[in-house]
Length: 367
Image (cartoon, rainbow, N blue to C red; front, top):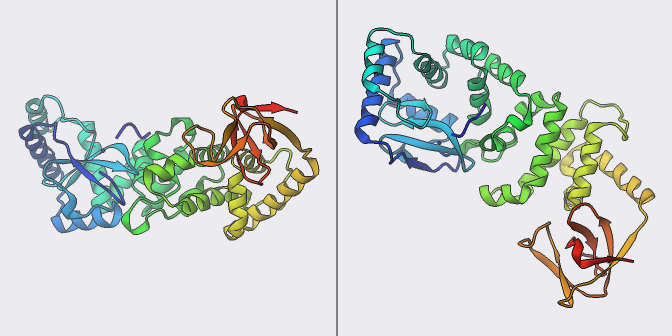
C-alpha cells in the first residue's frame, strides 16, 4: 500500500513534471485517451474540474499543462493528473515502448495496467458501481489508497474493503500517515476523520501505533504542515478517547488504551497539562482515566531530586528532547531539580521555579 507517490491536496501545490519529454507525454496521453474512448469512458472538462475541486481539493487554475505531480500533506504520492487528458494516472514515469503499447491496445490485447487505470478514473469521476465492486474485491491496495489518501467515502463496499485490509502500521508509508487522521481537501482542512477512525478502533494495535506516532512526532508534523498545535493535540486526545469508547470499566494493569495513555503522559507530560487546560476537549472517558492516572501518580510517586552539573556553570532546560528545541530557562550548576522521568538520554525535570522540561542526563548528578 502507498508506495512513493506526486499533486498537493488541500493547501495543495502543484508541480509540472518537467523532466518528462513533452512529446512523450503527449503520445502517452493520446494512447490512454484512446483506450478510455474504446472502453466507453469520457470525462468532460466540467466534471473533471468539479470532481477535482470537491473531492481532491484541486482548483482548475492550478493545473499546468502535461502531468502534474501531486503531494498530499507535503508528502510525495504515486499519482499524477493530466490536464489535457482529464484523467488521473498511476505512477510517475512515462510507460516504456509506447509504440508497442499503442499497437497492443489497437489489437485489444489485455493490459492490466490500463484496466486498473480505467477502473480508477471511472470510480473517481463517474462513481461507476461495477468498477467500485471490482476494485473492492480484486485490488485492495488501490481501495486503501483512495479511501485513505483521497478521502473517498462515497461507497460503503469500497470503504469497508479498505478498512478490512488495513493491518500493519509498519507497512504504512510516511506519505499516508496524516491522511488516517485528517481530511486533506480544501473543504475539510485538518478536520478529524471520525468515520474512518471509528471503523479502525477495533484494530487496537494499529490505533496504538497511530496515536504513538502522532504524539512522538507532533512537533515535526506541526512544523512541516502548518497544523495548529491545538488541532494536533485535539486529534491525539480524540485517538485516546476512541480507545476507551464502549468500555464499561477497564483493568488499568492490562488495558491497552490505558497503558497507551500512561506512555503518552510519561513521554509527553505537556499533553496531559494541555488536555486538562482544554477540559479534555469534552471527551468524557479521556477525562475520567486522565484523572485516575493523576491520582495513581500522586499515590505512587516518590519524588526524586538531582543537581545540575555543567562545566559552563549552567545548563538549558528545553521544551523537547533535543538541542535545537526551545530553551525554557537556564539552570545554574549546583541547583536542585526534581526528576520526573529518567528514560533515555534526556531527563524530564522540574526546576525550582516550577518549569517542566528536558535536560540531558550528562548534566545531572543524582543526589
